[in-house]
Length: 207
Image (cartoon, rainbow, N blue to C red; front, side):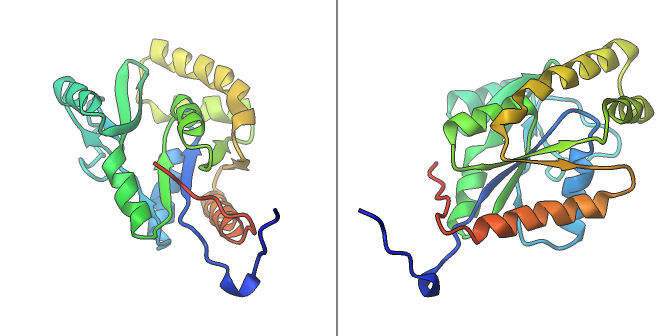
């Protein structure tokens, strides 16, 4: 039986949005700029065992935890997903996502491609957005300009980025984050979220 759709009764469900892509593509900068623009999304803070960089703030950029504390989160099933990324653990606190969705807010998660694949399997209704540089050469240049990794780790990130392209088909959208066009990238992401909330068949998240 076909469900009758009444446009006057349309109500948008909160969305679970994944922002992903290779290292160096600008995921962190995109999230920061979306916050600065005042979009009313809940931005999930990821837990990680990675050491804190000088410019990062605990509880804002990440929850920096010990390996022991991270193991406890896994044992207590308090993570929506977790993975080893370049030798460090990263995971999404489950309660944080549930509380935000329950309040009616759209949730944005910034995770690596491996984590995005896990979310696609666990939460098929999630909206997955792949952030890309304008070319492989541009991505390599950005990684080198960061100067945050030794040469061996830099080569590993470049090799991983090439492999991650194979996962592109699991995503719903791809957004090119061109050099010096960060605001345009954010506007495109906001437009995707608005379009999703206007869909006749609404995505309903069940965690």
